[in-house]
Structure formats: C-alpha cells, structure tokens
Length: 179
Image (cartoon, rainbow, N blue to C red):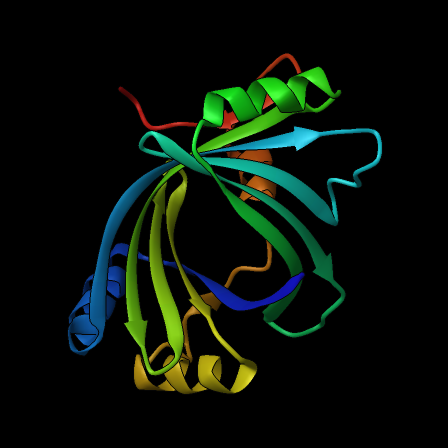
C-alpha cells in the first residue's frame, strides 16, 4: 500500500495562464481525458475512502483511497491502485459483487514532472485546479518555485466537489462536459 502526499489548489484563469508559463522549465508529460466513476459499497465510508474506476482511452485504473487525518493543506492518503485493461469488464465485476456507481466526473489533466514532484493541471466542468504530488518538502519547494504560495488551497476532493456542483439524477451525481 502506497502513501499519496499531495496539495490541491483551486485556480483562476489568470493564475492558470501564468502558471503554465512558469511550468515551461518542467518536463511536460502530456494531456489526457479521464472519466472517473466512484462506487459505493456498504463497507466503505465515502466521506473518508473511495473505490474509483478511472477510464483513460481504452484502458483504466482501479483505485482505493483512504484519507488520513490532517490539519494541513497537504493531504495524506493510503492508496492502492492497479491498471485495468478492460474498464467495462471491471465495471461489470464491481456491480456484480455489490458496488454501485454513485458519482461520475470528467476531467482533462495536463501533467508535468519537476524536481521530484508531479504537477497536474486539471480542468473539470466546475473549475480549474492544480495538484502537486511528492513529499511535503518537495511540495513546498515546488509551490515556492512556481510562485503558488498565495493560491487558494482546495481541501475538498473531486467527488465532494462533484456532489456540490454536479447534477443529480436519482442516486447518481455527475459532472460532465457538454458534448
């Protein structure tokens, strides 16, 4: 089981434009479109843990995350994940064993690598966000180098934000881009 350490910020379009310029010195990995489905199950407290199936193109990633208590803007989460070659088959398996889709959100993610951290810029239907993942020390260093000390820290998870800003149909919340 891995430990994920990251800090997330909600950013404005102006902050986005200036941040992209400052990221020019970092290694750009690329952009992906993701569809993320969160599943409920009686054994999972959705306020502190999730099971997520992420679809990227024809492949996917199955993830379990459990948030650890923290007063800091830097989140610590236990994380277990594995690649999935057939996301539709995995969705059928999850449904067959009692997992129910409760939330779906889409995002475009751009990724950069810089000084032992991963910096991602996420565009969701309800806003722009930046996440820096690394150790607490390298996150703080990257935050300073990228001049992000005044950016607004976002403590809510994307599932929480989807419940707040997305559409509800029955028991399913979603935040999708218009087609």
